[in-house]
Amino acid sequence: MAENMTGQTESITQLGKAQKGSPRYKRIKWTIFLAGISVFAQLYDFQALLGAVSEEFSITPSQSSYLVSSSTFGMAFGLLIFAFIADNFNRKNIMVFSLLSATIMTLMTPLIMNFEMLVVLNFLKGVFVSGVSAVTLAYLSEEVDKSSLGIAISFYLAGNTFGGMFGRVMTALLEGWFNWQIAVLFIGVLGLVSAFVFIRLFPHSQFFKPERIPVKTKLSRMGKMLSNLNLLGVYIIAFCIMGSFVSVYNYLGFQLKAPPYNLPHYLIAAIFLMYAFGIVGNIVAGSLSDKYSSKIIIRLALLTFVLGLALMFSSNLILLLVGLIIFTIAFFSAHTVAGRLVTELTVTEKSMATSLYWLFYYVGSSLIGTSTGVFVNNNEWTSFFGVLLGLGILSFFICLYSTRKL
Image (cartoon, rainbow, N blue to C red; front, side, top):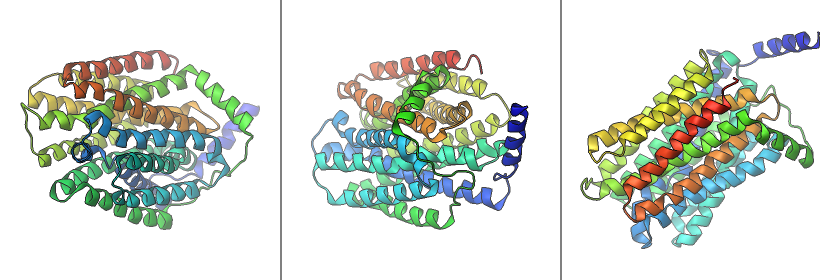
């Protein structure tokens, strides 16, 4: 009887949520897309600038990657904090605070000419911007009808993808034409405009009320989440695939700039246009997850991820780029479905569950994204791609195990 009443209540509540085609749904979808652009354009604004930074500060490629890893490590650290406090505050207020604070850090960056201080500032930027990622998936699962949730999530992730692509391409081009300071300043101005549009148009929550829960209770719930093998499996997959993805886009420019390729900076910048394929992966995977089993889609995506990495072992530029396209599509497809799986596997504390997902995601970005630079320092590209291929295969088998009962 109780279960039946719960089901009826959930059905009624679901009907009140934003549905595809409604004005509220459109505002959520497009402003969350804009927030995704701002977050990822700022988080990875230095990724396309590592070559210039390496030359200006006379440091190795691996050391230059600290500017990316410090941002993503800051993101991971911030997510750990928000896992405990996010449910205490209004969802929109957290996102607004994060967007404005991160933008201030980005606008300050061009004024800093000390490498160590740049690393610190990027860490702080990552901490601030983490608030958006900490609550977005929870907000969407609370405010959007289940029949449209996959598309809504894919729009946010597509915004991440587009922001990453646009930010990297523009910073690479502006650095080539001017310098890295102008490139970063451009991203800061973009972030400021995005924040003000978001403040004006993004709807407040209708189905969430802030609730203060004791830290001890939160720690207990976090422990239960980490002991849930299904959730833990998704978290480890996020760690592996994100670390692999950031490694490729951190260092591929160094390979393409050197013999036998010797590509100019504007063609290397164009490599980040591959993110457009990622947007397709986001949206297609999100749409399919509204119709078919998420476990089947993520398994296929991870198999494709491995195939893309295998092709990138080739020294033939065409095959390498085809592999990069396949790898990029597969990564964003797997990431989209993994994000949905986390919201489906948790009934309460969704912001904590998604914060833990992003925590593993960005720790993987920081640790793997920097450590694989050792191979790049020594020009050992076979070993570099071999490690990433191993992580892809590991992710697939973890997926088989953790989703076997879904």
